[in-house]
Length: 386
Image 1: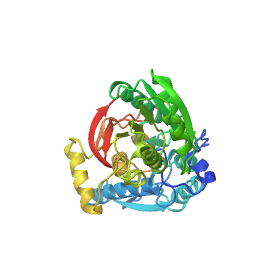
Image 2: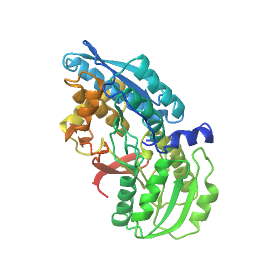
Image 3: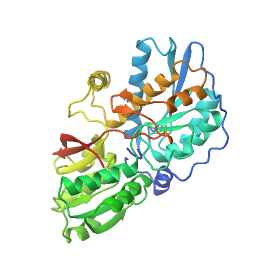
Image 4: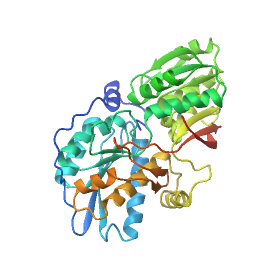
């Protein structure tokens, strides 16, 4: 996530804050952290429930809450109920940091799930670390985000992984010998995917153009592209701009495949593109409702649909798994420091998005799918690798 994985950006300044994910300096930590209560285990939610990337945050909040409800209904963790403290970071990095401070110092949570985006996660982790409280982002994907961060865990694959997958897919599946690369230059997520794509794609990039999150008119760039010979357009970016790009490209008669990362996920992409024009689209997802899944994933689908009367997204599923990862790590733990240690030892945890193991930097590599969309509907999904 990576904005993921966004919506209309209110202003370029807020976009820059959302995407900014420079080196995080956390300082010293309270190794023991917050104590686990005798009757409850407090978990904080730090999601983008309003603002520019609310589509991601609200999806994750729903998935996370469903997991909590299931765990509590099954007797909790060591007989203790999970007590959720739910905070909205408003899709703002400064607010994400402030919410974290409130959760760890006022509410005394033992773990935090969220934020969804890389920028907000980078802003939040320092305050979590100082308090000795582990933070797991279901969908932050920026490469290097966890480097040196003992208390930060990431629940999905990184940006470079997606760039390699797209490169492999357009080459071997779409037979694209020439592509246009059209990147959101305001997003570290998008730039990370684009960088990896450039490094691994063996064909010719006939145009390497950029836009900025919040842009609405892509006609000039698309007109330049239309005059070139190419086999596909690769768009590292988020659903708001990507959807508009699809809409305008198709309106101009550009019918080549358009390929993106997991930032295309969600109904909002189709709303921006319109179902009529959202065809010949391919994008990465960490979860699929259209292919054979495990019994655990099927149960999640049924439960999510029953509770919210809607289809879950990959973000919902990742957040659901993140809560279960925390719950598993909280077994027998007396404080948040022990939960962190147990999370770091996680190997082959079986979730609805596949098996999760954390490496030395607390990153994970999950199974990825390439989704095929026509007329605004996902028609197929196939397992893909870099």
